Amino acid sequence: RQGYGTECARTSIRYAFDKLGAERVIATIRPNNIASLGVAAACGMRVVGQIIKHYQNKDMPHIVCAIDKPQPEEEKPDESQTPSDTEA
Image (cartoon, rainbow, N blue to C red; front, side, top):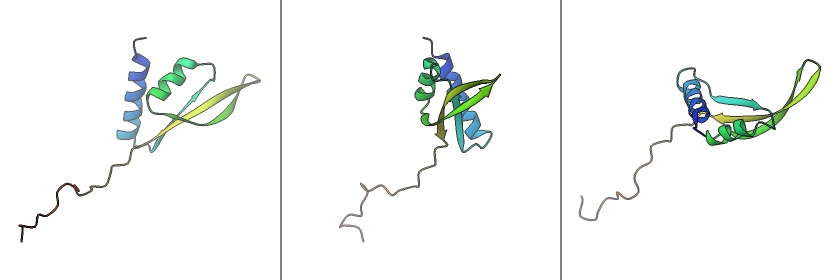
């Protein structure tokens, strides 16, 4: 495997968050599409549910995977820097 699918998916997810302002990106994947499920997992997506798509009078189950936009961490003071007893 060359990883092009994962690279493309990661870039698309970043684009959705950074340029489109998306808060969540979802993917609907057929359960037997092991490669796409692997790409979703490699991108940090998690299974959040299942749906049935109806196409040409057929019920087609899909797994729903999602990733939420990372929230910036609040700045925390560095606990290793404590005032010494000699400072006044």
